[in-house]
Every structure is written in C-alpha cells, then in structure tokens.
Image 1 (cartoon, rainbow, N blue to C red):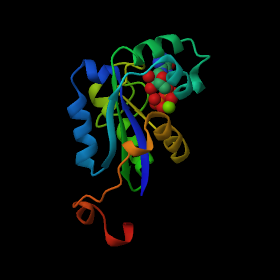
Image 2: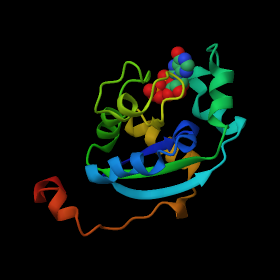
Image 3: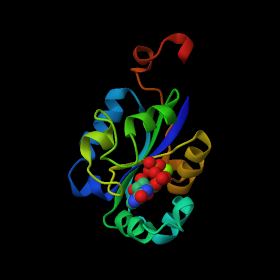
Image 4: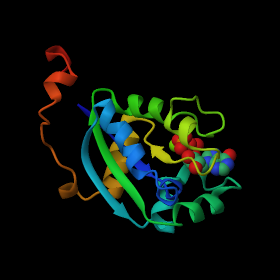
Length: 153
Ligand code: IDP
Ligand code: MG
C-alpha cells in the first residue's frame, strides 16, 4: 500500500478547517500513518518548493507558509497519491472543481488549504523531509477488510 504526504496550510489553521479537512481524508478510507503540528522555516520551504524559487510569488508563498504552524500528515492507501491529488483539486481554488477540497473551501491560488505530493517518488522524499522515521506508524485498521476486496490488499 502506497503513502503520500499532506500539509494543512496556515490558511486551514487560520480558518478553523483542520477537522473538516482531516475528516474528508478519514471518511474516504485513508489510513493516517503520521500526523503532527510543526512550524515551517525558510530552509525547509526552499527545499520543499525548490521548483518555484524563481517565481515572482515565491517570497509571498514562503511568508504565507510560515504565518502559523501547519499540520503535516502521512496518509496510506491503495493509489493514495493519485486519490489525494484528485481530492485536492486544481492549484487555484477558484478553478478547482466543486467537490474537491480546494474547490469547496478556498478562493485563492496561494491560500489553497492543502499541499499534496504529486508522485510516489516525491511522496517518499517529502515524508522523509518532514517526519522522523519513528513518527510514521505501521498498523492495520480493523476497517481494512471492509474498505478493500481481498485481491486489492
Ligand atoms: P500544487 O500545490 O497544486 O502542487 P505547485 O505548482 O506545486 O501547485 O505550487 C505550490 C504552491 O505554490 C501552490 O499550492 C500555491 O500555494 C502556490 N502557487 C502556485 N502557483 C501560484 C501562483 O501563480 N500564485 C500564487 N501562488 C501560487
Ligand atoms: Mg506541487
């Protein structure tokens, strides 16, 4: 079973949406393998958003991501990277489909509620960037046999 990495951004914390967003992932049937609150700094954000450092909005993005602590999560499930990206929706909340997290909870391109890994490879890199190995837990929820058919497990 694959895993992915999610950040509940400061916009989520400021707007009191932590519970709502986590609830969506849980109701979908994803396993929470790791979860904690942490304060991000410029060093970790330069690594995490390395593909954006030359973009004009980068300083604003970094400021925004440090505005409050964030919640970081490691979620587990079959095809979880694709599942969570499709639950997340398009980058700009105004263009994100209704029914997606960004489409339902946001109005901004920058203040867009969540980060979600975009590939299995990046998910593994990001989980290692934000979590210590002992903060990721491997357990079998009792619901697993109701969530998946035997050949899917
Ligand atoms: P993603 O979060 O949908 O994967 P990326 O292109 O990886 O999108 O961008 C990372 C983050 O940078 C976005 O989630 C958003 O917060 C911010 N961002 C991306 N493009 C813009 C923009 O054009 N204006 C302002 N912020 C942006
Ligand atoms: Mg991205």
